[in-house]
Length: 206
Picture 1 (spheres, rainbow, N blue to C red):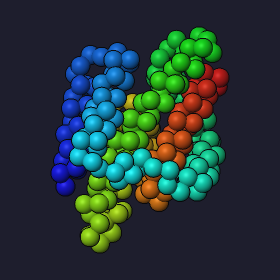
Picture 2: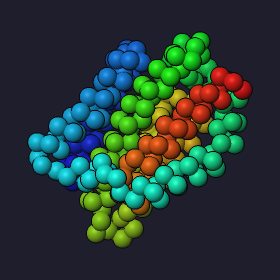
Picture 3: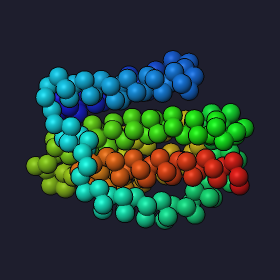
């Protein structure tokens, strides 16, 4: 339970800074990296916690990657629809210069990879694995953990296009199931990042 409380406190600080800090994209990525990744990793090292307890493990990578690519294929029609909508075209890519050259686009997507790692490590690793462990003795505890994690994940999307906020809840459920099934955050990270790259391309091209 201590891990769950600590995870919530980290999120509250991150959300407060995101909404009130007046940071640009790069500053926000730095803050997110410190809060979502560096501080938890320092705690893991300090208290001799196994990284695998938070999904930092290979796990069932073959099943995970196979499932990740299947999920991307299923999501392509929805992504194409979203990429054609004005709200998404106005919001993505999140760094406007990415539209102007391939080099800028690649630079942005590498930065997004770091953001995605922060996100997956926090939501699917730190928070979900902690919730799952805390609720393990409860009936349907694993699914309660997944739903709770997905709800919080959805709230973290407030401020983005409305359809994405709703979509993130269901994506959170699928990614949460995948992380727990494979005992790793890396399959959901692959699905999340590749989908993001493809979506940015669709927004620019469509």
